[in-house]
Amino acid sequence: MAWQADMETQSHIEDKPSWWKTAYYQRRISLIVILSIVLIWIGNQHRQSKAPVIEVVQAEPTPEPQPQILIPLPTPLPPWPAFSHPSPQRQWAEIENPKVYMPTGSGRVASAGYGSVRTNSSGRATFHEGVDIAPVEWSRGKAADKVFAASDGKIVYINRVGGNSSYGMYVVIEHQDDVGEVYTIYAHLASVLRELKAGNTVTRGQEIAQMGHSSTLGIPVQRSHLHFEMGMMLNPDYNRWYRAKKLTPNHGNYHGWNFTGFDPRLMLVPLSGQEKIPFSYLETLQNKSAAWELLIKNTGRPRYFAMYPKLWIGDPYNGKVMLLRISESGIPLSGRNATKEEIEQMGSSKTKVLTVDKEVLGRNGLRHIIQSRGEWKLGSNGDRWLEILLYNAR
Image (cartoon, rainbow, N blue to C red; front, side, top):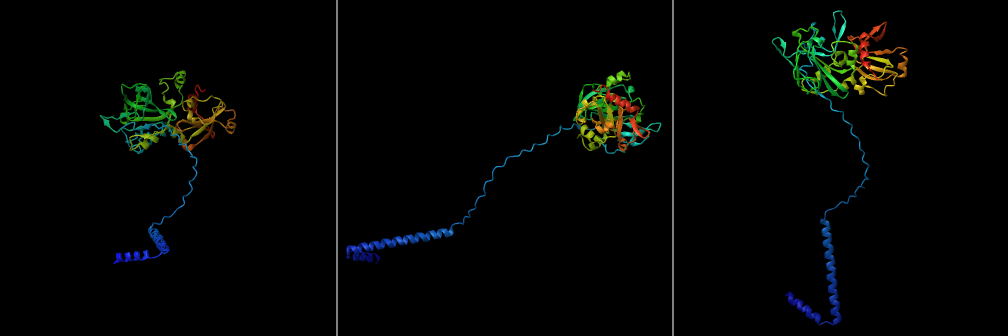
């Protein structure tokens, strides 16, 4: 048996000399140590064969922080005022529809529009500064449409006497725009709400009047309409000029001679199919082409440019000669100091029409400028226009 063999071996060893016993045990211990080392090495090899392979990736060097570049955002323009419909009419894009734009007695729908679209009894073109809006509803043979403020603003004038103006009964509303104080005019009214008076604030879409046919021009009831204008004031001292001329009737600063405007369809047509749109007088003026340019010598700067300073370009007026760019309706679109070359073209004249764009001028219904002997110059209407513009110039 195994245990018996061990005992026999042990007994046999005990029979040997002591030196032999010592060598025997040393051999046994050495063998055990060697076997242990071999087993440990095999175990390590086995574990390494099953260990996952780990790929050592050298990290990219961390880049140095770059200075942050701050790009300033553009300063937003002030929000444009919102405009909406001045009457129940909505089909503004139908510019040839007599149910949208009320023609004159000629029946031509174009005569309801803006510009030199009319012809007087002598066959000469006349200028219409607004648009004539036809009624949507009739009641007992009269226009039944209400009239609304086209934008937020302040009522600055109401004429309730239809027989003392070609505008008949009319209301003027002042609005705030990027360019300054601007105006809408509502004319040929049948009535104005009794509670309204100058100084009242109104909101866009607020009812202000009833459409009608009042005027000194004898507009028949079947041609009742709203005459609607969008424009600028030429001179805040107009009333003083008017009284100095001893003219009547006196509508203060809110007389038609003191207003000049652009085509309201620039606002109305984009409004088609919408309840309101943003609209800027300033952008409209900046995008308009000039019909003519006028050089004026040694007059002082018109107060018009105090009301509308963004329309003056470049250095302050130097007291010598200014150049005005003027629309077909007489709006000073911009003003600036004249160049040396422009001044040389004036000679000894106080004024000189420098350029004329006949396409923009059109049929020249206002006749601010006239052509004589092949040269353009101010006509009598232009002289009056310039006198109003320059009154109390500083």
